[in-house]
Length: 257
Ligand SMILES: CC(=O)[C@@H](O)[C@H](O)COP(=O)(O)O
Image 1 (cartoon, rainbow, N blue to C red):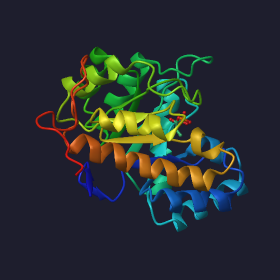
Image 2: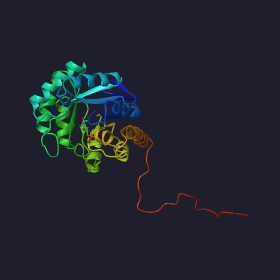
Image 3: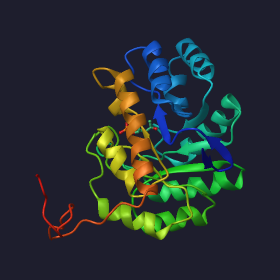
């Protein structure tokens, strides 16, 4: 069990719900991954009108915790308004806060993010900020009232995986008691295992599963990788060495007769 802000979760894999080939495949992928949290974009689905209402019914029927997000918001005002609407629609104070600052990289506007986080935390939200791996920004977000951080490992949808391992390691080391969820840029199950081995608490991903040739199978693979990475982290991995160390006994000789 994973205690995230007082909620017991059976999985450390959080899944996005966009871009799947069909609603049925999305539902099967969520089950195969054994995820217990899905994130939903209020803006994107609202744009769908009646289709949006059907989509929300499907999400509710999955029986998992919903983490609404402010994907597509480019200003503090938009993000705050979207968060408040999401609270009404989904009946949760959890919000994954995205304030996008650049159209090409989809990187967060960290200044707007901190401002929006402060407003929403003061209003009683549990804010999950999608941020960079910058330690100073992380400090400011915690100062604004965030109890969890979601650093990227690469730009959204890039599938590059952890491109700055040193920054992620440093972030984990600086905030040992803060739940840290790697969000965005994962492409392969091995990427998920790698960040879990660094000691991150969970991962959130979308594109790598939704756009895979077989999303259901890929969701299952990511679920296993997250578990493997966590178990490895908790098992005390050996450190790499520059020299060979025999793994078989060096004393005595094998006797065959
Ligand atoms: C789904 C979500 O909330 C986003 O943060 C993002 O889509 C995740 O990134 P990837 O799509 O790269 O996994």
